[in-house]
Length: 176
Image (spheres, rainbow, N blue to C red):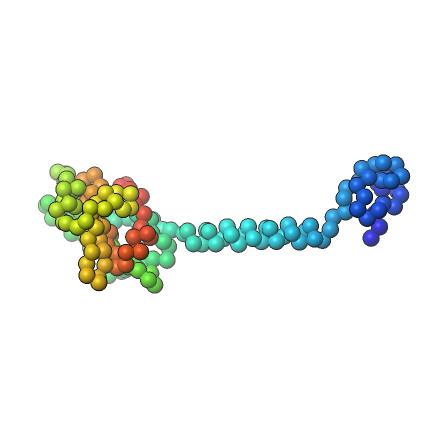
């Protein structure tokens, strides 16, 4: 398709940036290839952002007054919610699972009096370890899973997983 100079009306050469007759600057011819490259870049960006968004979806779960982040594909185990309260200790635990892993989180505290949570966690044994942003104790149960126990102010928190890799699915948000 022939282009014409907007100033003098003379026919332009196919790749002309200026009119050969009057010297007027003209916009370059837009090619289908330019639009195709732009469309490909947009598609790649949309797919990339969607993949990041879909793989990073999390849910916030609360056990007693401590919040955690776990992937959204974990479903709460309806039969695994315990809350025990007596004069001395309040203990809550909940469980979640997906196709590969099981996570159980327990929180214990002594209402009103406080507790030295780090001393209690240390008394439960295990290997001193830093995980989930806290120093605590890792316990391994023969072919049954792992538990990480740590103190969070006046609370003792236990995160149990059936597979060590599931620790990577847990994030501690903090107390509410």
